Image 1 (cartoon, helix red, strand yellow):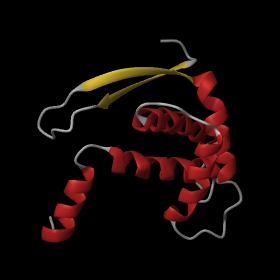
Image 2 (cartoon, rainbow, N blue to C red; image 1 turned 30 degrees about the horizontal axis):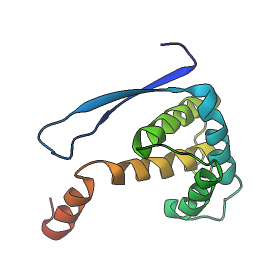
Image 3 (cartoon, rainbow, N blue to C red; image 1 turned 180 degrees about the horizontal axis):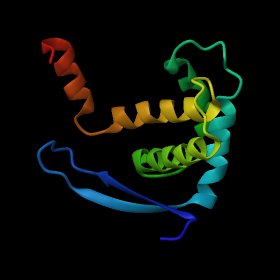
Length: 129
């Protein structure tokens, strides 16, 4: 794996007891325009008080990039990984920072796309821990 590649392992199984993993490798160079669009969409939103408020901005940025993939979850995981690298490079800790806000939003999307997450969330809401 070169420094220009990002490898993502993700579970493709709908069965919570039997995992089936696939590996996808993305070109960092091809993902950077998407990362920049998402990060730019979250720039200067210091008046936002909740994470969900960034959703519309991130969704519009992703739509503007005309992405055609079969499964968005590994793509979001790769973008989130790049954002993590950017955050660690610049030692960012501000909640409103564009990279941190974009990463937070993508991680929420990834969670909801994870097989079994919604069912587990509903179960927890109904019956508690």
